Length: 228
Figure 1 (cartoon, rainbow, N blue to C red):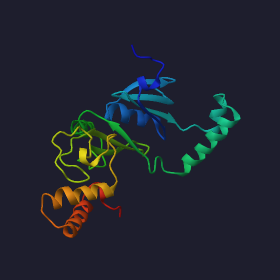
Figure 2: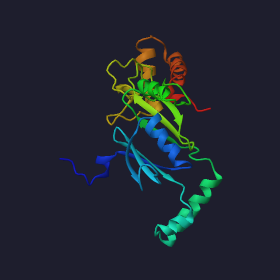
Figure 3: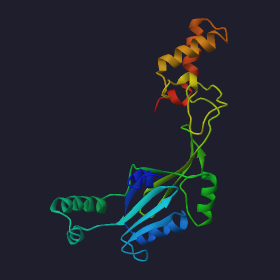
Figure 4: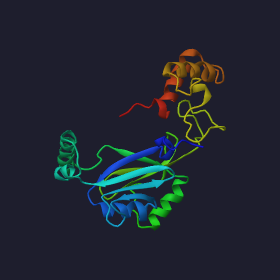
């Protein structure tokens, strides 16, 4: 039997977000996204805090806590100081800028259709990404961005473009481009293997032409594309 004292045994992924309109946010997670409302305080009809769960992933939401409320709740002076700092920053800034929250679902396309049917307005359509996920984005009423995703099986290695017929969902690179620990090898090793094992051995190119061809080939692969 699992140990219930291990929080990871309950919810392996758990975040807490501050909501500008907690009732509207509760309705979004419960009615639009279909999350299960597990707990709420002081009650589910008028919550100041709530915990939503889907597939053992937890998203908690809480209302904006003014400094005077923190004092009423019995917080220490240090906790009140932190609450004051967060309260003032939250009032001045957009919520969650630069933060993307990832939630796994069994079938991202089916989930996307359910969200649309319930009146949700995703920011993007489901798309298969080069990093082995198929995902789409949606914002909650406060402005937090959620990426709902499902791992997908890649047809080609994202380092050398070799076909991967036996790849696992979410696997990005082939066995020739990774170490025994599954980590991507340095570019120099991938380059040398591409030069000697492919362009020279299979394509019968001389070394100088093989090096030029390998550089051009690898520059087009997601693992080695330079960020603009």
